[in-house]
Image (tube, rainbow, N blue to C red; front, side):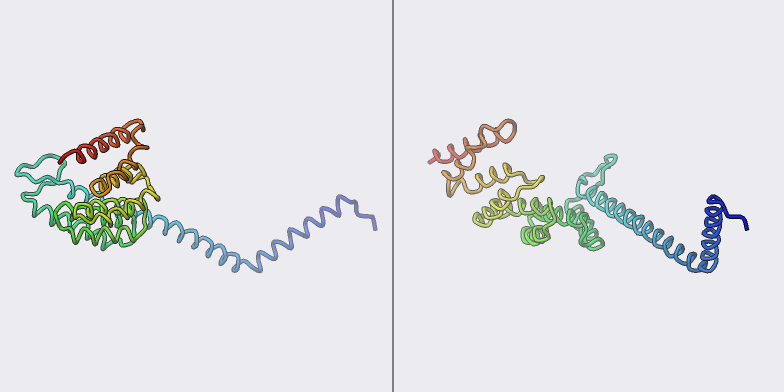
Length: 237
């Protein structure tokens, strides 16, 4: 028997390996199809979930945009283009409240619901429903969802200051100074705190404002103006 060359041996081994692979695939064809089907189903489910989430997010954003249109509506007998119109303030207030409450109820726990709840609290505040405003703004603060939790705390501090609840307002503003956000920068909280405590502690108020008076732009101007107001108030008999 002639000896097999090294090349022939390699060729035989390759053929055998191919034959073995083909036999394995034939024997396990059903399993392979099943595995591939499961994998494909997983991909389709993942794509479907992403599409559904995107669709839900778009729906929430549309609902929030529509609520804002109502919030910004005008009260007039005429019908200006691109604006929602109401005949009376009472009619508008009911519509604003319903729009935000419906969004909060339909999409609880979402960023859009948090935003809607914040603006609902602001709406209550500006329509002199202060008990309801306090309740809703506290809920936004307690949610911890930034940056609107900080904005709600700031609005709550303004509400407390307007009611003469200076210590409660001061506590919130000092927390905001320690933990500023993009919506409530440290400088804004500091200037507001100085205004809130100016009557009871003008010296402390000035101490808060002095480092800000040299700042460029609006911060420096507001700090300087507030210092002037504090000085004038002290000089007034």
